[in-house]
Image 1 (cartoon, rainbow, N blue to C red):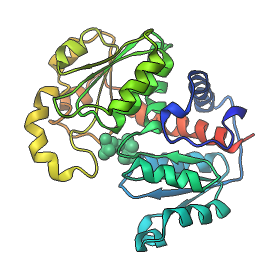
Image 2 (cartoon, rainbow, N blue to C red):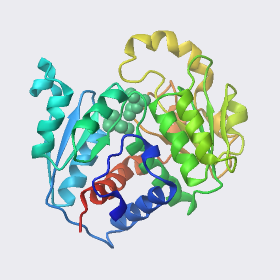
Image 3 (cartoon, rainbow, N blue to C red):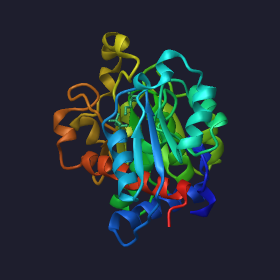
Length: 306
Ligand code: CP
Ligand code: NVA
């Protein structure tokens, strides 16, 4: 994947369709262990929000490539004492080979990327979660053997995961339906961008009707009703989101072969029922595993592993 060497991944739309599909192929090869890649590089993790999967999968991916990781929590750096991002980015650039950042504002990530020449990777912002969607698409491809023409229905909050899913589905030729309560829409600019990528060949549908959206879908997907940073809104959100739960009844409307995905962490009894997440159509553990393989492919590509 020479085309990706040195590149940032701030939004899933930083990849074109061919690059995204090649990354998924590389992830598949790395997962099968038919291919081994090596790079003696150092990745920094600068995470301002909690993380289990992203932190551990990036770390293990880097170790398996023969590289190393430095966990740079903002509290143990001068970032917490107000050192400007512009300065921090130019300094880290001199030590590290790549930087994965989890933060609130997309703008902060973009400032890092503007001031650091090394690859900067979005490990989740309020706007997007592109690394999650690499793993999601890999999981869907493993189940169906292909992506183009399938329909993914996301039910719940129009959040970072929903935004990146719209871009990802459009890039691989999947139809995407987002069913959300009024007032909790995905980002309008990303909707437009996804529709531009889909170019009328596939659907990017926004609706308030979860049942209509679920009908015949190959993938049902949900995420928490209150994301990190929205904890104080949780009590007000719950009654509004109740009709947007993935239950066995909603799942029965999807294609009989449909799979259920959730980026995790999950709140059973809220956005998904215990029966569905533990049921036979759930692929959430494969999906979580695939974070490792997908991010290993991404790191190997941007770092030029051989
Ligand atoms: N899905 C996901 O990004 O999980 P973490 O918050 O645990 O990294
Ligand atoms: N939308 C969730 C995803 C967590 C992985 C959040 O931002 O908290």
